[in-house]
Amino acid sequence: MKQVTKFILESNYKAKNAILFSNIIAGLVLINIFSILPDIFSLYSKYGFFSIEFNKHIIPKHLFIIDDLCNLFLSLGIKYEFAFITIFLIYILSLILILFNYARLFFAFVIVFLHTVFINSAEFICYGADYMISFLLYINIFLSIGNYVSYENFNKIYSFTIRLMQIQLCVIYFFGGFGKSLGFDFYTGDAIWLSLNDYMNENILNDISKYIPKYVYQFFSIHILLIELFYPILVYFKKTRKWVIIDVLILHVGISIMMGLHTFSLVMIIFNIMAFYPERLAKIYKLVIDKLIMFLNNKKIS
Image: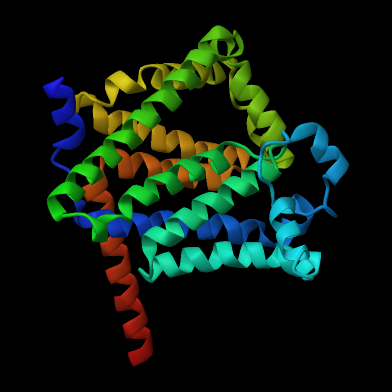
């Protein structure tokens, strides 16, 4: 039991990068919400693709949804459209205020609540990215409580947070691999072939498919299955950790390119690096920011 407690609460991870990671999470969520902003009425409003009558058959009655929030505004005499937009503006403003480190913990709770409402309101169209963002928003709460506890205790909370992310990734990949192992299409290579045919640009697919033999699909399918299934073991051995993380990052880049799931891939890439190489992620982030500032300063001078 002492070893478990030491593993979770007394790791070498230090809380100095907590605010930085909180900002990265807020930035990721802002990218996500801005990417769907032109379509929010179609996706979430009662005038969109999914009517109230349709949602009654899909969404459990006990779940709190956007229409429930809008009804609170309607009771005050505010029009539905204005109420609807206001909810999303509060969500965006809360993320921006986190980036400016203003009442970070309070707005972390606000964002978790509103994001949960969005997921409840659109269960039919939610996918992996939405749920991974939801988990990271809960992580953001832990990263935001540094001003309310001692530095020593916050280090323990931060260590717990990093370990929680690691465990979550192990659960995700293991059960992802386990589910794939129960079927047959990942053994035959059909899974990769079907994914490319369903999502990839048809013109590009027609040009390259004739040069790809069947055993290539089979190799990559089995490779993905094994990496996910044994991720929890490989990622905790020092000799294999770097290679399994690189492998997983390449996998998500491939998902982004081949399937067009850009938000999901970006979230999972950041998630993996933040969980297992937090110090390196912090260095990369600071290096990119320094280069960007240098570039902008040189541009002003010229």
